[in-house]
Image 1 (spheres, one colour):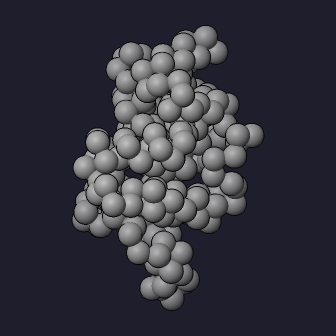
Image 2 (image 1 turned 30 degrees about the vertical axis):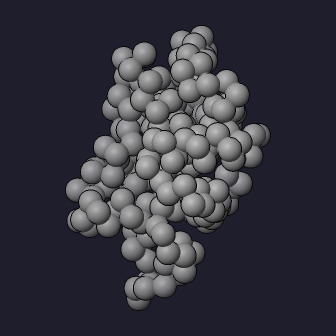
Length: 196
């Protein structure tokens, strides 16, 4: 089995940046935006639609979206995207060792790969400052944006996995990027990958 690192993260904690640094250090692929492209290609949906509707990412009520618009068999577009996403993740894990950011990969790959599951979090002040600086978010209420985004991720994760997102017992490692630092988190994860 290939060794896979999955990184779940609170919005603004730097999980994506950490994942890319880990992949670069280890000389393996990192799948984040690349997953969106593969899911769009496989599903037939536009890349912009997949990006807007994956991983609890939608600005509208995610739960409302997943429950609305069901077909005759009770499946929504979100359910279909989940199935495609799951299949793409399984195929990638079978093909090569890599880092996968978000998208419930820790759940999808449990018992199917040699996993190192990571959750990255940080306090509200660190994340708020970071999304304003890095993503150009508005200074007016970054805390509200953080809470909303994390709430959608939590709902999405729970809906499709029946597990609690961010609960330490579901991960091998939980790191506070605000206290430890982005670069140090990447170093720790890379070291663990090599050591285990």
